[in-house]
Image 1 (cartoon, rainbow, N blue to C red):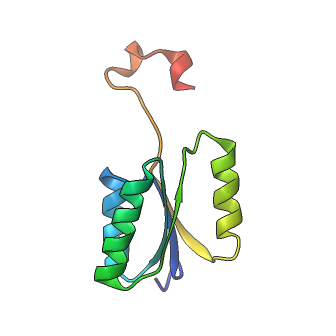
Image 2 (cartoon, rainbow, N blue to C red):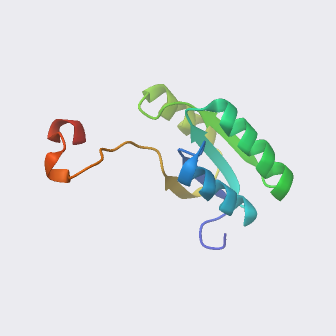
Length: 106
């Protein structure tokens, strides 16, 4: 926290690695902004983390491929001093790189 400040933003926080980052940072008493597509999962995670760690949590559900979601994140975080971004949302292909569709990977 001394290095990054009190607030962290985690994309893709509704499950997997993003959820685990949220758990670890909440245990360190970071305040969190959690984004992801599954609102109910974000709400449940936020309630659990607030209850067990006493941190502040703001959830912003939405798909990051939608410009409106990006705009909401900017608006709702404008007053927060976010010093740490865990950019965990995304997609990717599996398999040998040379066999992946290069147009899809752009």
